[in-house]
Image (cartoon, rainbow, N blue to C red):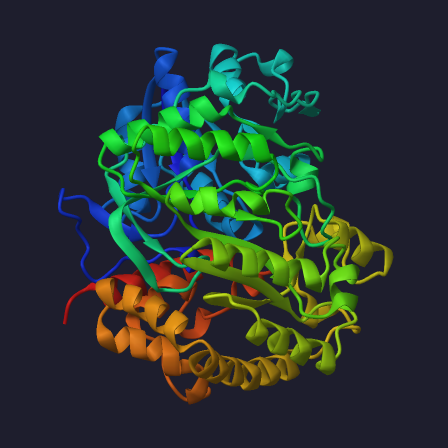
Length: 533
């Protein structure tokens, strides 16, 4: 069978750097590689199928090029993979464009958002044939074998022509993750630049960069997260030997930096210890980063992780108010946060990053300012303060249904800033004002209290970024609303431009016609920005 796999991107979360090509001639992208379709591609190829991958971030393959190549390829199946609510509009539009261009093959959606909203998506998008739910490796193998009779393919939502909607039983989660081949990274003509988490346009290295997933799931019940729902509250992992073998393969392929995209890497001490021992024993020089909880029992292994070239450790700190941590059901304390950060820095972890959220339910101005003051006392090297949003599949969404703040029947494909719909949340302008004020204080405090630590981080940025962009990152919180963004920030954060300019949350609430117009305008603006003067 011939299968085309397309990774759908929200333009907020990637950018094209000014130096577009790596030394090997590949286009460079600031953002995470599409490990989902890369994994499916390797599984399909091992089974003898033909696989062709596309990434919407590639400026050399815009949608019109993708559509033309698919028209010529005539694949049996076109898989559109996307993670979140904000990517769904782009997937929906592309599916319609494929059908309008005469694509005769079956079209399938997959990913977290598709899994949690399968039946609603299928009803809203009659252009697609299947919505695939859960892990995709065995599912796609089963689907291509029974493409025209998917009745027995578990994990598939579909509909016969003029027939009722069919929602096949869920696919049981497999614990044997070692059975799958390593992702097919070399078949996609892109190289990825390692930058700070989310949409911060700060480059960490120009080593050949990729991501790995060594485990899946997280069992903790944070109210804003859908990961426990998607993974049925389970955590599954690959064996240390399998992880080390992939790192050896990456070393052979010339990669120098890896981010483990596990939802919670720091869960099983013996496994982490074995991975670190394997890295050291095999003399693998790859630098890596991971994310975990501050209440992990693995903190005694931070020195071993640093010895094994763990350079970046990211914690979901969320708040400096215990009241808000409890409201978010983080099941962690302020003392645990401080201990984890101190232990990581004491162990020699170069960059400790803190994720924070503001604009939480029942959060007062005092609570919000307390979060920034708490952050200033932590030895974190970098930080991000993002507004809390709510989307379907999370416990907070269920709470908002009970409170009458969202309508599950009409709002399922949308997501909202909590400040826009929850009367217990501070108003948006208040959140913006406090965040601006406190960020200025926080940066001054960090420069004065931890000058050496701060200068080391800035030195790393200066190795790979223009001096003016680094300076802008530092002074931006002091400039207020009147200043514009750098080119990199425009590329990483702009979703729409001109009359169609909008935040990502607003985009999910637009009509399909408005979305189509916005995407056209966005493409034109991105081409203008990326064209050298």
